[in-house]
View 1 (cartoon, helix red, strand yellow):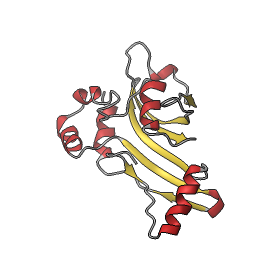
View 2: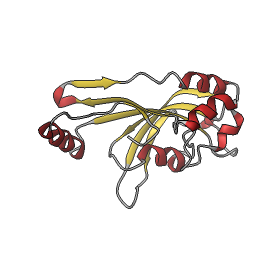
View 3: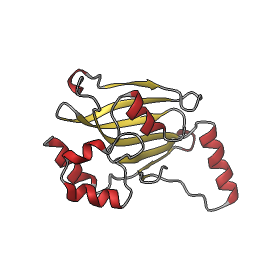
View 4: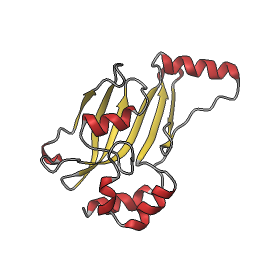
Length: 169
C-alpha cells in the first residue's frame, strides 16, 4: 500500500508464506478493490454526464495498467466516492488512474492534484488528515479465489466528516 492509504494489508509470518503471496500477486491471482474520494479536476465537465462505471487503460512507466471503476456515491456534480479494481499492481496505479485517467484526483493526494479541493472543505478535518499523511484512498478488499479467501477492511472513521462536507460542496 502507498503511504497514507488505509485498509487491507497482507503480512506473512514465515518466508515460505511470503514467497507464496509474492507469487500470487505476481501472477495476478489476488483481486484488489479500493474505495476513494475524488473531486472533478475541471469545471468544464461534471459528473452528471460521467459514466457510472468503466475501464481505465493508461500505461504507467511504459507498462500496461488497467483498472475498472464504478461510482458508489455522487456528491453534487463534482465529487464522488469510487470503487476501483486494479488488474495490474503498478506503483500509484489507483492514484494515477483517478487523476490522469478520469481527471478526478483523490482527495488529500499531494502528488497527483488532490490537495486543490482541500480549500473548499472545513479546515479542522483536513488539517488532522494532512498532519497524519492520510489520503482518501482505502484498500477495501482483497480476495484470492483459489483459496476461497476474501478480506474486507471497514472504511476509516475519519472519512465520515469528509464525506459529509463533500455533500455541501
